[in-house]
Image: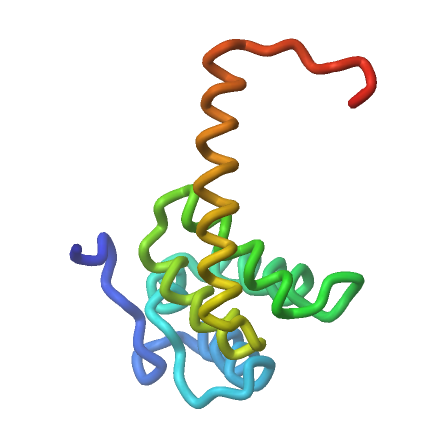
Length: 131
């Protein structure tokens, strides 16, 4: 797969993009920018907006980081986003996800997709007790 747009490297980035890159690296405690952000940098408004939203949503809260990363991974699997699957598998592993947890997560994602399709296909009316 080739990227639709040129990836914007740090050295080639505008000051506005560099500021977002610097915040990403500082927040994540890393010394590099991944290709997702480099692609979004083609449109600095999208880069900044997306980074601010992710930073807010993925910040510590009622859900711990491992849970958030595993949810993100599950949605990425369901959406078939290869890049996001790789990125959030790494993030979930960094946050403590084990191979056993990944196996169970994959089983839940697979089962949810199967039963969702049955429910949609049969157009099953929602039980009153669930409302």
